[in-house]
Image 1 (cartoon, rainbow, N blue to C red):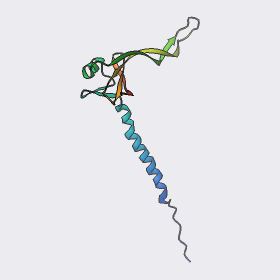
Image 2 (spheres, one colour):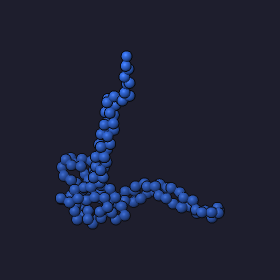
Image 3 (cartoon, rainbow, N blue to C red):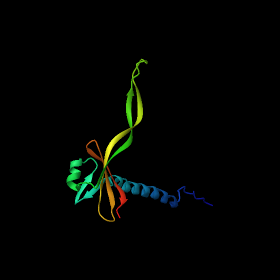
Image 4 (spheres, one colour):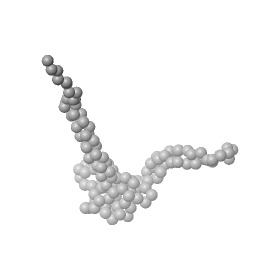
Amino acid sequence: MVRMKRSRTRPVLLRPRRWASWLAAAFTAILVPSAEASQSMGCNGSLVSKGDSPVSLLQKCGEPIYRQSVCVPMLQLGWVVTPYRAGSPSAMLANQCVPMEEWTYDRGPGAFFGIVRIYNGAIESVRDGDRNR
């Protein structure tokens, strides 16, 4: 009687897990650029995005319906020098108020308000507000 050796191959049923991970990676790669795409707003056929100047925003979208000065808390790095300790100054992180402006634009009935945050002479962010009724 002749005995045949059994092959030690894995069943094919384990491969769908690989496909699932590849599929998840592909969907993630597709969805990640859309987060940056939301940092823009269309006005009168032109596009306004992060980094544009307020002058460009006014030329493309006109005057906002509402302007507001806001205080945005941000972590700031500061150096503390004490006259009583010898050595180099120590670093300190502090939550400080950074003044910014928020301009609100009406995009029409049924659309979301466009809120543009301006900091240091440039558009810092663009986001959607509440829905216009």
